[in-house]
Length: 183
Image (cartoon, rainbow, N blue to C red; front, top):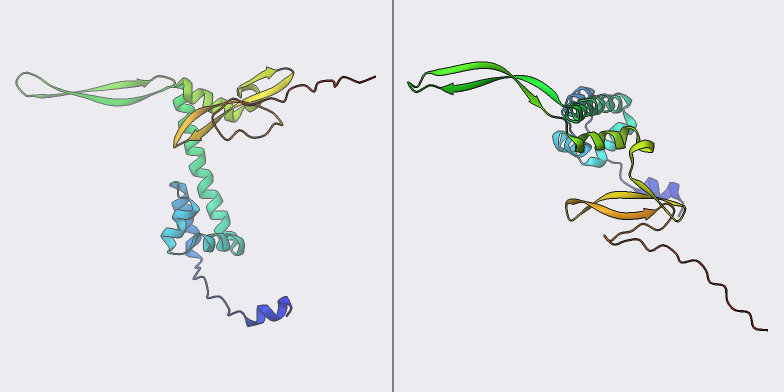
């Protein structure tokens, strides 16, 4: 039985229920950080249906890209602000001994975060900022990996070697020994 005969025997799939208004909804949701899984929850469909809609309806795909791009840009700006520090207007409220409320406009300063700066630079300028060392002439990269839900510094891994799954130092191959020749 050929593929064409098998396809004829399969029942037609039910319509996905897509409406053009979904594109604008998806854009707004994605601007607020929604993932494809959350879009599926919102539209009460499977995640695979979201993938199908993106493939079949270009306006839906474009709306999702636009929304996710805006959310990514906002996070990037926030990370940059955290990396370099920032100030914001605030209000200090205190009570005097008679219970009267006194308010004062102040400017709060958030100092730069060296962790945010490193993360920002490692991603924006990886050739200059990724962690690397030289081992016997081999370039090696230190990777940060998630272990048990916590971010952990992984051991150094030589470029081109096998991936280290466990949090143990890599084993570099030993130089080959010359076998003594009999003679």
